Length: 332
Image (cartoon, rainbow, N blue to C red; front, side, top):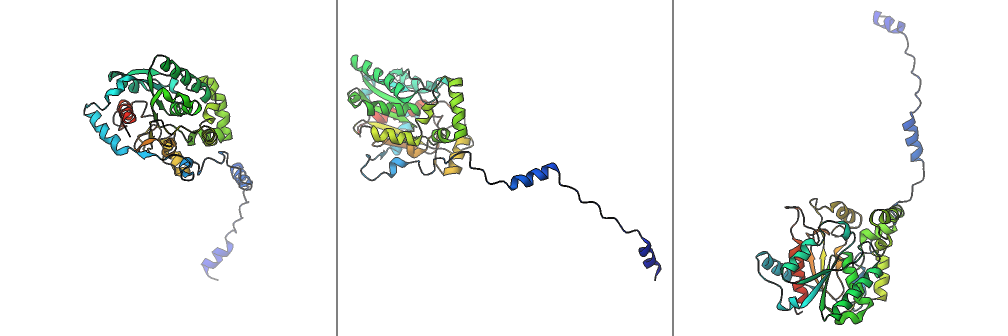
């Protein structure tokens, strides 16, 4: 035996270290892996529902007409300081209707109102409850239209978001008031429904949150959110279709940009459903059947009613409103 072999033989044999028990975190992780899969807490969602109106059989609803090229033509004129409103514009009263949470947002519709007033037009903001129920606000608009008729005035209704839905609803429920209305302008109105409102209303955890927060924070009614869900809009439109003979112009928009304040919601709808939206309403759901439609893919839901920070938006609310009113008063 060599000297090296003898040394190796006499070396102590290492004692195997005891097996360590898994720690608490490891045991917890192992236990969780063995649990059955939990149901998705966010509910079924609204996949496949956006644009349901446009998928109805041909002839079910009147077709829309694309006015986007004409919109950009008039917008260039407005930005260059040229007059675009027809002479008849001064003969009408302009009733503006706020959307959801409009009473809570400083400056909401301010630029829109001021632009029309600077053009010498008679402007009235309808005293609707922006967190109230549809039928309650329709009753307010009905009284506003009856007042205008009493004083011999014709009206142009201009509604943003939920306000646009209420503008169409008052004429669907009371078609005889068509005699008072010269035209209707809907700005980003969820006429067919709102994907965000639908998911909020049908997701159990989120529904409990709005049921608690809406009355507490805004003195509102959480059912006003549910009324903008797809299921509720489908039921309402089936019972009360919008009259086809009212000159109507709809603004349908989308945007997916980190520069937008609504980017998280835009991204949610894009990643979950592949919906092109402005952060609140998908573009296809903002088109009122039979309306002349302006389609923009670079405008979010806030920018039509609130001025964006410099460099973050491409449109001014006053410009948008002036052009949309001019389009509504043009002869088709």
